[in-house]
Structure formats: structure tokens, C-alpha cells
Image 1: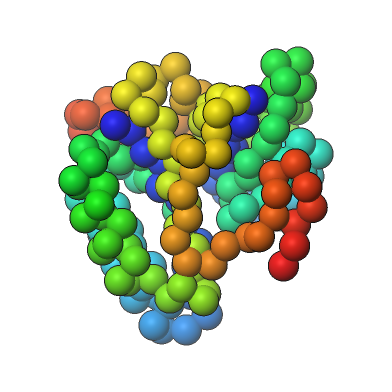
Image 2: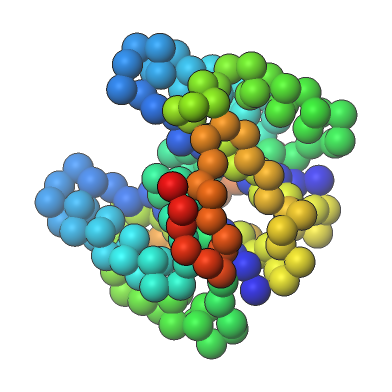
Length: 96
Length: 96
């Protein structure tokens, strides 16, 4: 299934910068960065559990937030873009 | 229907800062900011056309990007959060 993962990590200190890098790295393992703090990830239910557990361990729950939006399997018609676009196929490579 | 609107606006110059404010203001008219550059908006088809037209006019299509994710009408089960959460009812007011 396709999920949108968006996050706000408080980077007012070095620890926050470190958390931000870790969050991005975790998301990169499952999908593509489409905007600064937005990833589109293709996962099965087990991978989703693993991704959530990893993110839950990394973030500071008082300062940071992660939102998951489930688009399901028929996700292509649910996504539209305006302006600068990544030209990539979600299950392919990012082509700039 | 519920839509997630996420955007990346290039703010390397004053014009970009202005576009960023305008983009946020347009989205605020239809919904709630849930993260730095992520809004959840409740719109009917006509409002969606108006919102898209407004955003399309404001952004620099070479530098900025806006992504729309349609969650449909049964959107609540499609949204999950980790960490810091806005406590609000989408059709209510934001309670911090």
C-alpha cells in the first residue's frame, strides 16, 4: 500500500538535527522523498509496523510529529501536483 | 472530501517568502495546518478547483511544488500520527 509520511522535527538543537537525519533515513529505506519533509512510501503491513516502530524510537514525542496518510493500493489517482515535480516512478528510480 | 496539501516553496529570496505566506493563507481558508508545510483541508469539488487555481497563480512553477493527496470522505481511518499532535477536530477549532 502507499503511504504519505510527513514530519516536523524540532531542529533547534543538534539532537534535533540528528533526529531529522535519522527520520529521513528510515523513510528512505521504504520510498521516495517528494518534498522537504514528505515521503511517499510503498510498504506491506509488516514493513509499516517496522517503519513506525523505528520512527517511534527516533523522534522526541514532545517536540516532533510524524503523520501517516494511507492512500491504499489504488493510490495514483489520489495524488496530484502543481509546479516543480519529481519525475520518477514510485517503484522506479528518481530521475531529475 | 479531505485532502492533504503539502508544499515546498523556494524561500531563497524575498519573493519566495511572499509566495510562502500566500500559499499558507490560501490553504488556511479551507482547513488546518497540521505541520509546517502540510495542511488538511475539507473541500467540495468546486472549492478544490478554486483552491488549485489560487495556488497555481501564486507559486513559481519552476521553483515551488504543491502536492495534493485525496483521502476521500472516509478519511479518519487513513490518518495516523506519532509524537506531538494537534488536538483538534478537523471541522472544529485547533485546541493546543
